[in-house]
Amino acid sequence: MMTVLRKVLEMALLFAGLLAVDHYHLAGITFVELEPNPYWIPVVAMSLAYGSGMGLAATAIATVIWVFSTHHWPAHYDHLAIQLRLSILPLMWSVCALIIGEVTSSRQGRLKGLQQRCTELARDTDKIAKALTSLSKINRELQVRIATSHYVAGEALVAASGLLVPGQPDQRLALAKLISLAIESDDFTYYRVEGTRLVPLLSGTSPLDSRSDASQVRWADAILAKPEIVHVEQQHGRTLLKGLGVAAVPVADPGTGSVVALLIIHSAPRMRFNPAKMTELRHLGQALLDYAEVFAKPALRLAEGESSEGRVA
Image (tube, rainbow, N blue to C red):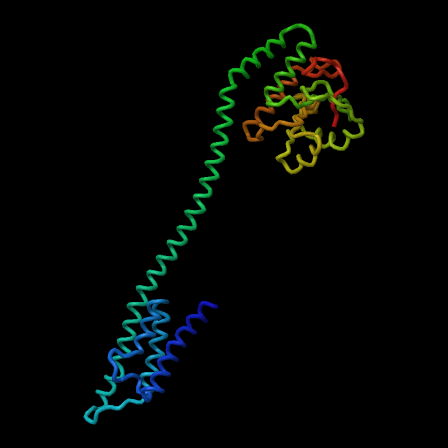
């Protein structure tokens, strides 16, 4: 709206200036003795600046002023000669306004299209920059994983061989090591489900602490209701796991479908809950079920291989 008012104001000022000069200095003869006529100025200016629309508007105003102003015609001019004399200048203004105005409108359209394209390119450049940053981060993580893969594979082989060693403490330490390698964190606790209670059986290197059974009831029933993995990237998972950890992996009995054990991952800075990781965690839960008999005794810490009261939520 303000742009239209500005255009009208500019055109009005141009005509007001020309009318003032005409009436106060040339007795209102519409510059008939001047060639080219000064009323070309608003017609050409509006057409160049704003296109054919404003150019034709200026032409209409100039034509009205031209036709209704006082003209002194020679005595030998007949009616047709006067009409031709009056109409030729407005006709030239109209043609000029259309030609110049259409060129201007086309140029403005191209400029607007280029501006939109520049905006799109800037947005695409920003997206590409973010994607490159993300790819660089992933590349660094992959390089670290590749560099340490031989070490991790060796650790896994050593831990797996420990499962074959007779003696429950050694087997449990080996299994705890395999869990820590699978989740890329030593901060976890494995619980056995006993009715409404969770009994901690195995932990990583983080210290085991003891909490009341009543504190478990607030979240244990909700997590154990369905044998599904819960993690903090889920809306309900953030609520259930608040102050407890980043993921809960249930271990379900395939025969009954009931949850018999629960692996709580308290922290895992490098873990991303993508489809591949979720599949790995489901396989981990199935594997833990196969070794359920290993957890028949009280809790054990991976770091020290000692029994103690486990972490409960």
